[in-house]
Length: 216
Figure 1 (cartoon, one colour):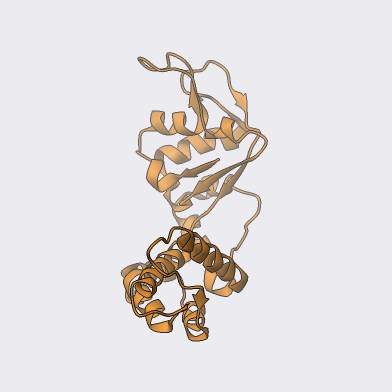
Figure 2: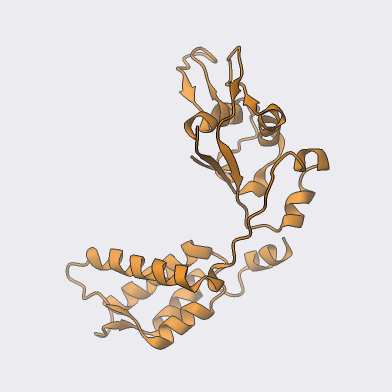
């Protein structure tokens, strides 16, 4: 069960509690019972993305669950056992995550740290994403002649990019290059200039967020 904390955190504790813990019938006017993320993820993993947004109401609800391994659905009279693993993900540094909460909260949040290398250092993943993306785009072509792959120079350009946008950035660049190739002069392979143009559009090296990620 995936929850994007940046998108879902409204700062309203009741809403966050309902999202993560669920609520019972009649918890508020017109409310029917609803399972929260913890219940839906039972025996599995509750994946909390954008974890640098763990603050305020989100932290309060998490502390209730992490303190005792139990959680209280909104409006309920009894707690339930937390039976899922909690996995946090963030593109911020470990130091940044430590600094956004107090040490008492921080020490309750986890037991192990998994460091995922940048996409640019995971060439096998880049190959898999590129192949899947080009195949998906080609399957939708009717009037266009779909490119069958990338030239050696085009692949080198992809491989040398830092991909701060991670897989999303890679897919956007591939989509852009695919369209430029399929609607331009006939070529069976996507060329380096088409990849470079896509990077300029979707992964510009001067974007301000690069400084944020490097600092954070």
